[in-house]
Image (cartoon, rainbow, N blue to C red; front, top):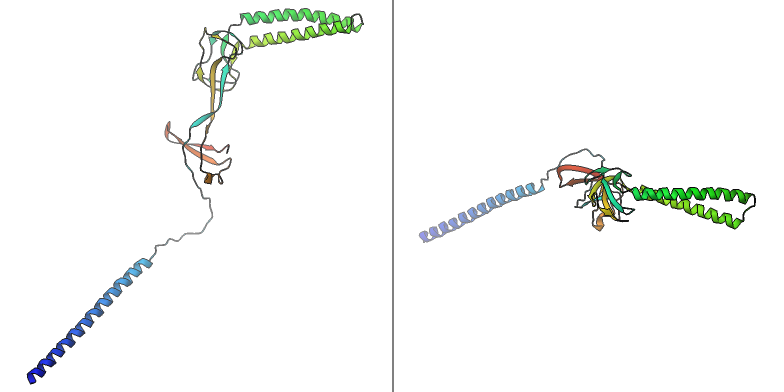
Amino acid sequence: MNIKVSGRLAYQGLLLALLVSTLFLQGCMNRANGSEDAAKAGEQLSVPVEAATVGSGDMAAFYSGTATLEADEQAVVVSQITGVVLKIHAEEGDYVEAGQVLAEVETDRYALEVERANAALKRLETDFQRKKELFEKKLVSAEDFERVSAEFDAQKAAYDLARLDLEYTSIRAPISGYISQRIVRAGNLVKLHQPVYSVTSYDPLLAVLHVPERELRVLRKGLEVSMSLDAWPGQTFAGEVIRIS
């Protein structure tokens, strides 16, 4: 029996030792897990911050897009008379001022028309002055005087038209700009209202940009614009919004 009792006591002691060891291990694991959780919680709670002085300033918002540059002014120069082109004074790529002569058309016929109209005008002017003096003296009827006066005015208009046609033999630039196209050559016959040149003004250049509806509320005339062009890589050009449609 002693052996059995001793054996029972030894078995109970072994169970107690195992139980204490298990509790001890669980406590160590709980402390270890608790330390790791605390460390993780500490890492999650640590937020980097930066201190700065409060101040006021401008904030910029940008919208970027692509557009094609267009000339602000472009004019097609037409001949206002019919005749043969005698001289060419401007070539493609040349810069011309408004009113500068680009080409000349034959002048002989138009100069003769001016001389004929001027001769007829002088004759009617003499007749008009004589009729006027007689009318003031009541030696001619009012109807006769009015007829001579009307003929004189009509001839004066014809003379002015002949001078205008002679002036049109010099084809001039309507605007300042560059010759973008020359259509005629010396010796060509040009007709009334036939295109002979194209003049383009590249100052300023316009960029038509289509923007989303949400951007319209912040756009207004005068806003600064910066542009970069494929033709000049690495360079930036300044502009401004001039129209919103």
